[in-house]
Structures are given as structure tokens and as C-alpha cells.
Length: 599
Image (cartoon, rainbow, N blue to C red):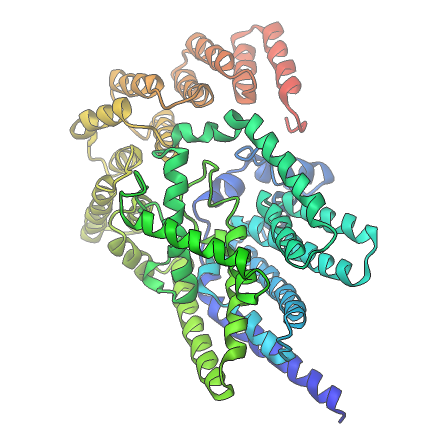
């Protein structure tokens, strides 16, 4: 056997071992069901459930059915739709496919690390590069990008982003304008999965600037144009802050703290601190409140200066990759404060920096540290995967630790609602008490909103306990004085559906009082108010008050002229009311505002 053949066999063997470690570590997550945004994007998406067979037209409609994002993410949505239909809605199949994409991404990370190793004269052998790729692949913080089904968006966006970086490296060696077009095309494909594929261009820009390539000047002009467009459309991008409990300024300074929470979870992960939900992070009120905000900002400033001054070192490139990877989701856009899947691309930068430190260590020191670290990461990922796999003990442990997290406690409450539904007799009442316990914990979280109150009303209606009177004043206080978040609105929608189905009994006057308080809340924009009115119209329709349902739906269409649902409601109600001409008019309205011809 030649030396080359022996070398290749070692590499293949290392890859097989690495893949096996990852699959085993992730295996507890396979049996978990759908979570959080999975419902809105997949299981409750009408275009995923409309047709029993897959057609070109059904794929097209599903691809553009992400109404929660202005850019729809059609490539990722089409992928999720095909999975969902072909697997019969089996979440296990969808998670396994996510893991397969993750393994492919790990191969791409290997190729990027190999190129970087050559450029920076590290000359790591193939087995060492496989080990570095394994470290990235087995990071517990990346479990949320793989086990969270809807984050197929992140996985595919990453695939095309890394591919564009590899094409750029190839361009540096062989030139060819077509490679530049191909690089931008890959970024565009990534954008069709999730918008943060644009961070790949930021990484390419930094690398090209450091090594004085021929692209960074043109890319600088591109970034300036994008920045100007962003400033011009300021109101469009920042309208999402209407439903947030923090301002753009507060979000930016809070992110300085969150970046270091991410770093800790990447480098020294604590399974107990990892979670799908990080809504217990309290926003910074100023750079001095809390004081860790100022410390974090100062450290980030020092790190930024280091990256500029020592820009040709591998450590600075890795750190720049990490920070640039967070430049979209962890800066000024009105997104939620923290999610672990946002580290899927940035965490490659930490592994790049780790490579530089690895090379400086002694051979014996490397083997001990690397072996121990991989075992530690594997065990942490395996434990964390149990949480994603729906293991009740793991979920409850998170809820008990994260007492200030609304969503984690709501998650635990609904776990016990499911147990309550299956139980009988005394055990059933025991589960009912646990449901109430976690709802009460959720109410005490700093950003509780209305969702624990509305969800408990729904539960108590099922358990035949009249609960509404004792919470009415509190609900009215929050609805009148607090900023109304999306979770509160969604729970109000669920409460309305419960009333429509005659599963919840609430005095009509009190329901209307809550509605009026929400509708009058200054934090709700016209789009949200329009959707609220449509829920009220459904209630009127269920009570056979079609004339009132029409009047409310008409007002909803006036508040938001692009609200297709308002026109659909009007078409349905007017048709049943016997006004066929007006019904047809609103059908034409639907077609006029239906950009993707979905209806």
C-alpha cells in the first residue's frame, strides 16, 4: 500500500468516526416533535396542508407562504414543504434530514479550514482538519440550528454562504470573472433561504482587504449603497419595534452582553444554560445599567481594534468572522434578543481562532486537550439533544432553572397539559396543579405579557374550572398599560378560537372590554389592529351576526389595505349574506394584492 493510499484511508477513517460521533450525539433529538415557529411555518401553514399531492403549483405556493418575512425565504420553505409532504408530517424524518445537511456543511467547513490552513502556513494534515471540523459540528450551541426543524433556513443559508467563500478562495487562485458571478449567485441562493447569507460577503470583504485583493474596493461601494438604502427605508426596517419591550438603542447595547454569553456557550458550554428560549435576558437600560454592558462594550472595542491592527493573524481573522457573522441578527434589526441558532455561521470563526492556538501547543498537549474537549462537547451535545427530543425531565429542568423565562415556563405548562389530557382520576388533578404552577411562574417573568393568562383560561375551560373573574383585572391592566408583544396577540387569537368553538365560556361584555383595551393600546400598529378586528369578526360570524362581521372586516381592510385576509373574510361573509356583486369585488381585491398568486 502506497503512502498516499494510507494517508487517504486515515482521512476516510477520521471522517467516518467524526460522522458517527455527531450522529450518536444528536440521536436523542430525533424523537422530538414540532416547536415554537415550526407551527406557524409548517404544521399550521395552510399551504402545507392544502393539497394531498405534490404539484409544481403546490410547491410554488408553499415556497412563498412565509408571510412573517418580507422576503419569504422561498428555497427553504419549498424544502420544508417537500419534507413535510413526503414524510407525512413526520418530525423525526425532518430532523434527520436537517442532520444530513449539517454533515454536508461540516464537509464544507473542512474545505474552508483546509484552505485557511494553507494560506496561514499552519499546514495541518487532513486528520487534524477533520478534528477541527468535528469540533464545530459537535458544538452544543449548534444543536438548535439542527434539531429546530424550521431552522432548515439557517442550515441551507449556511451551505450557500460557505460555498460562496470557497468559490472566492478558488477565484484568488485561478481568477475568472465567472467565478465572481458564481460567488454572488450562491449568496443570492442563500438569501432565498435566510437573509443573513449576506454576512458571507462581509467575511470575504475582510479577507480581501487584509490580503489586498481586487474585490474589496468594489464590495465597499456595494456596502455603502446597501447602507444608504437601509437609512432611506428606516421606518420599514424598524416598524417591528412597535411590539418590542426595548428600543433600537437598548437592543444594540444589550447585544454586547449577549455576544459574550454566546462566546461562553461556544467555548465552555454549560448544558443547563442552553435552551431554545432566552427570553429571560433583561435588556440593558443604558451602558451603566447593568454595568456589565459598559464592560462588554469596552472589551468589544478592544477586540475590534485588535482585528484592525493585527489583521493578518489567524486569530484576528477568526474573531472577525465571528463578529461579522453576527452583524445582521445581533445588531439593530428589531428581532428578538437572543437565539442560539444565530451562532451557526459565526461559530466557524471561533474554530478558526482555535486552530491557531492548537498549532502553537506541544504535540502531547494537543492530543490530551483535543481528546478531552471532544468528549466533553459530545457529552454536552448528547445531554442537550434530550431536551430537543422532548424528554420531559430535561424540559422541566430547564423551566426550574430559567424562572424568569416566560416561554420556558409556558412550554413546561403545556407539557403538563398534554399529560393532563392522558391521565385519569387523582393523577389528572395532580397534573392540573402542575399546569397552574408553571402558568403562575410564567406570569412572574419580567416580560410575561398576557399569554399565560389567556392560555390558562383556555386550560381551565377544559378542566371545567371557571377561572376568568380572578384574572380579569390583571388582564385589563396589562392590556391597557403594557406594550403588547406577539405572544400576547397569538394567545388572544387562541382564546377567540376557543370561544368560537364554544370550548371557552366568557361573558361577552368582558371579552369585548379586553378587545377594546388591546385595540386601543398605543403599541399596536394598524397591521396588528387589522388582524385583531378579523378575530372579532370570526366571533361575530360564529354567533350568526353576519352584518357585524362584515362591518368589522371592512374596518380591518381600511386599516391595512394590503391585508388579504380581510378581503377573504369579506368575500365569504358577503357571499353568505347574499350580496354576490360585492363578494366578487373583494375576490378581485384578493387577486390585486396577492403578489405570489397564492389564493
